Amino acid sequence: MPNQAHCAIATEAYAQLSPKARADVDTLLELEPDATLASISTWADEHRSPATARWHFVNIAADADCHYVAERDCPGGACVVGAIKRQAAVFRSTASTPERLKALKYLVHLVADVHQPLHAGRAADKGGNLYQVHAFGRGTNLHAVWDSGLVLEARKLSAIRTALLKLETAASTGAHCACGEIGIRANLPKGLRSRAFGKLVGCEPHRGSIPLARTIPRHAPLLGAISTASLDNPHG
Image 1 (cartoon, helix red, strand yellow):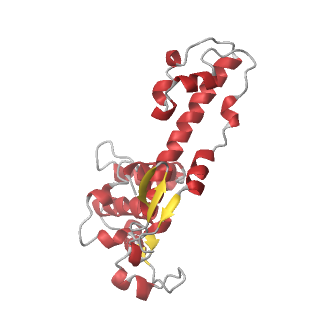
Image 2: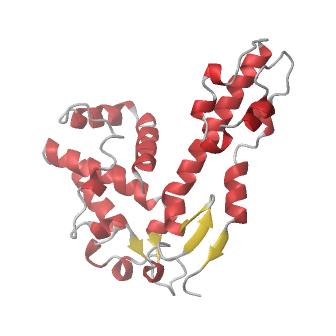
Image 3: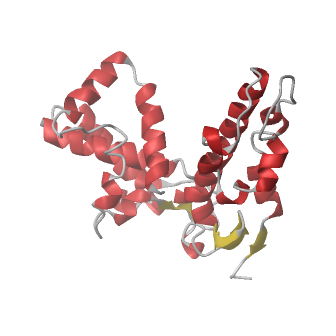
């Protein structure tokens, strides 16, 4: 999972901590200057080694119908499930503050990893890494679509909706301004930085114009890209 996804998840997780849990986390983070839960969320990837590589995923047997069995799928605790259990035990213990901070770094990362469906996949296609797809206008693999493709497309969609809402607000107040003057084009994906987009939204909005942002379904680009993606299974 890419940095931006881990940071987003960690930011959301921190916002939902209870006051007591947040105070505990803040105490641990004070060991490192300017550290936040988001900034440490990628530490486990940055310090991955042969000994910890298997901590980021679990392979489920192909004939197990997605049913996890620890003895079969996580021998010796060498998988994400076992790693989370071990690090959670350290975090809850009376271990030293540095040890508990290290456990927190693993937990904030690995819990995010295990919520990406293909981190609990099959060894045959390496969790979807060998399953080639065409999505969002480019060739990639199924694991990467889940890891970063959906996140990046969601951010693009958010930028588009924000830009349209700004224009709608300007229109509702009777403001007359060029798209460039309010910095809209610079914040849009390249595909929309065009005169065509300017004509669509109207560079000189007027009072009572159509609320354009509301005419675009929140998830239309994502769903469209997924539904029209051509899948090419390299394994036949």
